[in-house]
Image (cartoon, rainbow, N blue to C red; front, top):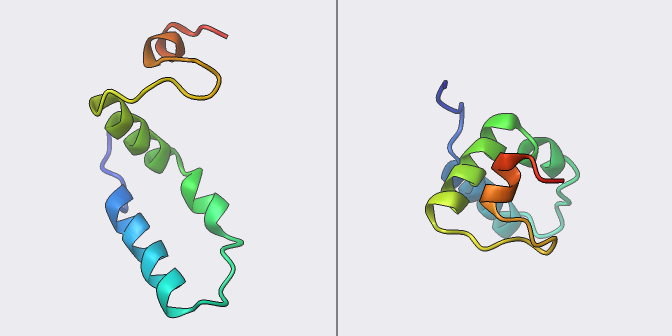
Amino acid sequence: MTKASISLQELRRKIYRKAKTEKQWRFWGLYCHVCKKEVLREAYRLAKANDGAPGIDGKSFEDIEAGVP
């Protein structure tokens, strides 16, 4: 697996700084950053490593990895 071009922590830091310095800025382009495959993979890895709880749909990591609909 290749290393993400930007770490999840760095992405959060950049978004935080932008929000704090430019209060009127609207994050219309946020979706494209959050939905990058490398960002989603890293977020999944971090949540799983942290024993993340099932989401609102009740699916656990085991369900997702087993392909349970």
